[in-house]
Amino acid sequence: MLSTSYAIIVFVGLLVAWLGRRYSAQKPFRSLPRVGIDPGWFGQRRRAAQTQFYEHGQKLLEQGYAEYKDTPYMIQTCDDERLVVPDKFIEELKNLPDTQLSFKEQLLDRFMGGYTKMDAVRGSDYHREIVRGPLTKSLGNLLPRMKEEAEFALDRTLSGSSSKGTSPWPSTLIFDAIGQITSRIIVDESLSRDPTWLETIMGYTASVAVVSMTMRRLFPALRPVAYWTMECGRKLRADMFKIHGFLVPVIQARRRRVHRGNRRKEHGGKGDSEGPQDILQWLSESAEGKDAQPEQISLKILFLIVAAMHTSAITAIHALYDLCAHPEFIEELRAEATSAIEADGWSTAALLKLPKMESFLKESGRTNSAGIVSFQRHALKPVRLSNGFTIPAGTHICDAADARTRDPALYPSPLEFQPLRFLSPNTETDASSLFSSVAAGDSWFGTGRQACPGRWYASAQIKLVLCLLLLKYDFKYPEGKIERPKNWVHDEKTGPDMEQMILIKERDGRMGEGGGSS
Ligand code: HEM
Image: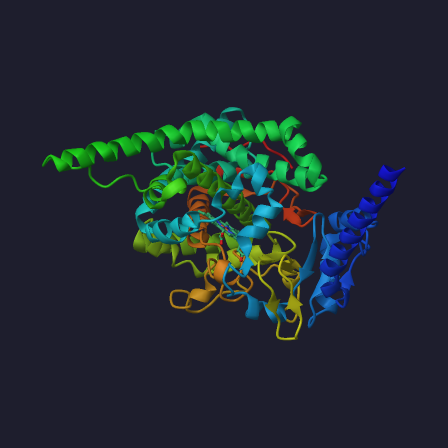
């Protein structure tokens, strides 16, 4: 009897504490408007609200964008509740330090960093600094290598499928080219062309996506069990294990080489000349303490693979689809690329003389959002907005980037694809007209201080692949297909239809037209 009363008292105490926590967590947002179904005080309508967002998130955010220009509003997404911040406030937030508004923390949260091991980048920024520093600064030196890999991969994919009498999927063609370039930039050794390594790094991002999506929908207490028992968890662990198995011996061998060189120098001999110029080396040289352990370096490479590969490939696939849908523009871009490369060779200088391509890529980015929200940040400290509202610590914020791209006040005739919409008369001096620029606030690469540090590399890589395609190949949709395929939208993600065919042949006619059809 006594123990029953005791249990009831404990239960009521816990319930009151839980209600108190929920009340104080939700209180700051109660005065704000909301779009979509309210999940309710006890989360009793959360499932319905999540399903609504999964199916109609894009429409809901369009509604929010139209109705709330001056006030932040709440929305239940497929995982947490978000505070959507209208454009008006982004200027005041975009340059806050990541100790206050953190891109990384929200990313690790959404991508289940503890399970996917992406949390290896928590607590240090070597990965970001390597990309922003040595990678970007070395672009000029890296370009010949990038071109070699792109040509190798395009040729491999096209000759492979032409020998089977088929056309490759454009998505396969682009993923192979981007994957091969990135592979060599990560590790400039024969490993970069090893088929098992390539297959593993290319499949790894998909494994991360599946695990994080699966885990996010599970009750937190069930996640550890799911991670160890579900097929997607097993696949992710196997991918990571294989990638470590490839990278760790390379890191160790390089360190042994440096060590031997240093000993030779100590004894008056000659040390080794400069080490390889690749991401693995830059990370190994700059990381300190625990971060310098080979497994930790390998985990940081895994993070960069997720950040770099899929994003770049999807951007290039969109661009290819948009080009096929605007064949009249192909000749214009081809002429521009031809004259830039005739003048400066295959160099970064040439890639900066493509004003039409820059505008075209920006328009392709505008009309094919990377996701329906952007500027995703986790508030680590409270932030006071100019309208007096304080964003509490712990809030996940975002902006309605996709809805913004169709705002006629910002983009006249927003539903029309205008390849030269962003053309600037002075591309060479007007950095904001470049695809890599985040100055105008409408970039694929994010906003402000924590915008993508890989954007210069990504832009060079995509322009390189497009130039190669334009100069060496003719491509078009199969007969009867005029418009580009519609993008899919689920949850907060969108992407191109991966199964659209295009016909592609070498321009000198050596390679026969593939047999793909729509
Ligand atoms: C077209 C390809 C790419 C797109 C569209 C893209 C997009 C983005 C976006 C939107 C962000 C978040 C920025 C924000 O919210 O303001 C980001 C962050 C990041 N990106 Fe990219 N990215 C691309 C390619 C790359 C490449 C090639 C690399 C590396 C070589 C890279 C490395 C990173 C890293 C390390 C971060 C995290 C930065 C941080 O922790 O503050 N990205 N990217």
